[in-house]
Amino acid sequence: MAHRQDGAHEDARQGQQDVLLARHGWQIGPVPYDMWQVNQKPTISRFACGHFRDDTAVHQARLSSADPAFQEEWTRDCEGTVRYLHNHPCIVTWVLFNEGWGQFDARDAVRRVRAIDPTRPIDATSGWFDQGCGDFVSEHNYFRKLRVHLPRGSSRAFVISEFGGLTWYVKGHSSFSEPYGYAGFPSLEEWRRAVRALLDEARALEAKGLSGYVYTQLSDVEEETNGLLSFDRRVNKLLS
Image 1: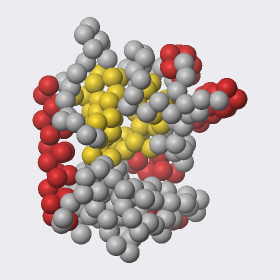
Image 2 (image 1 turned 90 degrees about the vertical axis):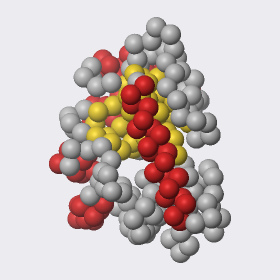
Image 3 (image 1 turned 30 degrees about the vertical axis):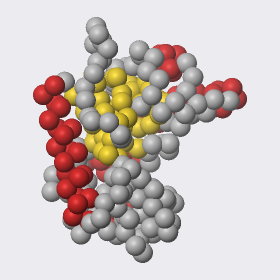
């Protein structure tokens, strides 16, 4: 996603970004995905525009820190990111805190973001430490059977905002010699079956009130070899 073809560094060249947007086509497997979640960095405008042309939604997530000075910086950056990207129609949700990383005063953060952009739903605490604010009960589930469980009386939507993480290491297309991820498989075909089974399990929960889910993850990231694409984006594990 807006990276150089051979690694994790962002490529600022517009032509390269256009090539990557077209090459990936927002389709990893037989069924196209209808939303991507972008973590820990502001989405570049070119990337957002490409998503809008392809009708693919984006969840924009912020990085956070517990230090008071960084809390002030985080608040400024968060508000600046919302102002910078608010006019991109493909961005459908603001994700404020992820897995408790430096989480602080989620209710105030929701209030600040809503004051700038009252049109989009907010995932205040993705994964852990729900504070009863925002528009979602947002769960990360890598180790348990997928389920829907809303607090009694809650009017918020339930989403599984991260799940999957199944590992398949592609030799020669990774930045590390040792893989990291959840669950290993003796063959690529067994990995594919496991990924598809998890996606089917998530889809089946829609009838029980699941409002959305995010499979982790699009591509391998350094030692994390749980992507649908390899680290260099040259191998599509589901289709290769």
